[in-house]
Image (cartoon, rainbow, N blue to C red; front, side, top):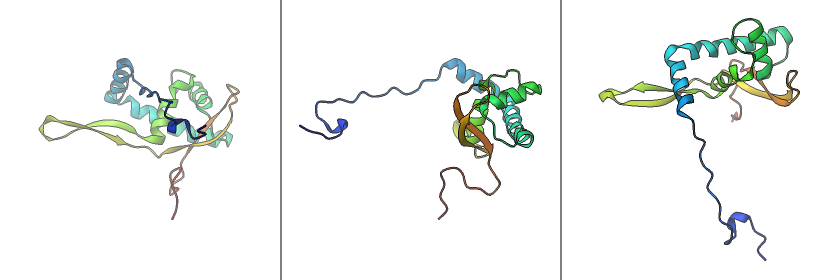
Length: 149
């Protein structure tokens, strides 16, 4: 009997995983947000909110806690984590923009990122679940996962 890995067995076929598809509605909403300039404002609200949360409580917030904090101050329209989580991910990983090239062509480029990083997981004071915290990256620090040689 072959005790090797499943992927090496002749009788096992591996099913291809479908790629995540984004609906046209969410793509259109993201494009409209970037075109209006509101995405930049929302990213700045999240970044300054992270700093203010740290200064007030001396602990880095979860997305739920940050959303509640910003909502109570009237800076965002909803106390739900979805109001800040996409912006936090953009501040950590960057976001895609389209720039024009010569000849009427365009090119998608990833810009930004590295302003915040994912911190240690802890129990959220709002949901009770163990979730990621978010923190502002210190000036001069290496991005998460980078090695100093």
